[in-house]
Picture (cartoon, rainbow, N blue to C red):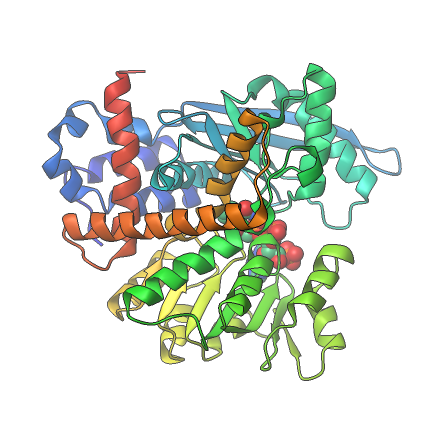
Length: 451
Ligand code: NDP
């Protein structure tokens, strides 16, 4: 999509001011391309330089994380927390531990988070953090020592009314436990509302583990419903096999669809009978194994190594695709393969998994394309429900919380549809999500003055 001529110089300045942060530039570009019609209707946003301000994080924290490995050697990683925007509530967004993490990754994720959190309709601002730590191949003790060192610096920036991190890639319930334990020890406060994604016995919420994957599927179901269809009987391809992917697979099966493939960074599995989710969860969550182990134990399933065929998963014919692994995993070529294979609906469980060329191909082909900001917002929305339960010292049932999540995803879908219609791009969920998320944050920023 072309960018409005009044917005183009703002984007150029973001690129100049944040050199080398290509994922951040990509995320900013995608939002700014949607905002031309908004500025025409709301001149107050230009007067108050809302777009310029929204692209600049309120605070960026970078810190050293020293720790001892099991051989007693000193290791040093770099930690980040980008507190992007607090107009709607405390900074809220996950922590990612992955060797590829640098400031540009955290800024792209934090920027996306601002609009996503706005779109949920809940009182949460946007932030994101992480470290270039690689948990793969590390012992549980090493992971614990790393988390303790990471929190020893981060704790001073957190608080239930200030900044509330959660998990993301490489940060699951185990890591949240070690991080929370260290926070509690340093502060001598059982401040449950300072982190979300906690275990259910110590302040966590039921459904938080499942929420991002389930929510992505609820969003896909809404997109299908808008076309007079449903998930029942659909053939589905899901990339990844981590937290988001596993629970997306589970929910597709609960709604009567069949997931025939998933993946990890080593390769993809194709299981034409439908993935056995119990077996996959046992391998991934208990044994911490790989998808190749699944193919060895499941008759009829095949494993394709990534080095042999990096894109095999998107070449399988399917009705629905759910990219749930990582950024830029669906290229323009992959999008064309999916379209060729009959795919009708794409919902992003991961953050920014589709390249700009891929998005263009889907939109041009009339595919219902749900961007991550909208489709994967169920995770952070359920984190906000966890914060609500922590504040009231209450615990809701699984069924009640799941129903709340379903309602939130339905509302997000409706907000996207309405904004897309109002701003001249009916059926375009990219425009709908960007505009609806932006309007909520921008209106709050105007109300709060120049801060
Ligand atoms: P996990 O670490 O649990 O899982 C990530 C999965 O993606 C793993 O299976 C990993 O494989 C796979 N993967 C990573 N890189 C590649 C690659 N290049 N090709 C194929 N597979 C790959 O992370 P999550 O499931 O929590 O997060 C996944 C995505 O969802 C991220 O984009 C995250 O930002 C987003 N997200 C997560 C939320 C949450 O609540 N957890 C909320 C909203 C968005 P391997 O094990 O080999 O690395």
